[in-house]
Length: 317
Image (tube, rainbow, N blue to C red; front, side, top):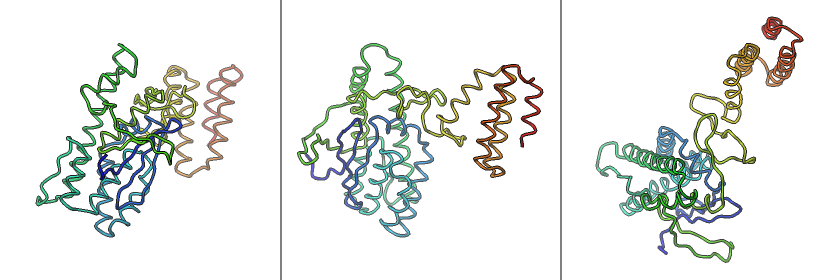
């Protein structure tokens, strides 16, 4: 095993763990349900990566490693891969040598090309190169996973393994050793590709299920109940996660020709907007929802007319 390995992976209780041993950052351990990080990683927009790295760069320029770590803290643990990228980036900024650049380039992989060090706007171009590399990696993962899910020949595990012939991200051959102190098998991870493929391998080994979200259409690992239909991510342009927004959206589609439901949902959204604008309290909004559902039921049962229901909704302000 090489002496300069900074990331070690292991699996326990169906979770993928990464032990980070970067010299400029306190040794830390991060984890998530095996496979969850890969699908959440695909969700993160490229501009978000660029914004995060730019903030870290600015804070490092102003206050060094400690300030960069402080600014990075809110983003750490949002996604295991993002955390690893952040740690590697801060390590490079702190060392700043040709050797550090060579190590960072090797860590990022063949889809990363650093700009010439004497070029204008070097660091901003460096961040652009990082973001481009990440987007390329995301595109590769998406391509092969979509291909795997379309192909029904062989088991799911076998289809993943077959992709290892074409992409390193699905090559599950690793060196490892048993750590007697931790009582786990440790895998040294040299590159970002290693970090990702190790997680995918553990997802398959732990038989973690994943499925497309019925709201956004992106794959996710259900948390808690395996029959969950919606992910817990927030779609661009939305303020609530799919598991809150999706059920309502599906209900809308089911009841698109339902005048009673249309009246209810119009009033519900009006009151939701008022609550978000702090014109009413959350408790008042909840109370409205409870009473409105009861009145809707009365309307469905024929106890009140649609016009009476609409009048009641309009009067509830």
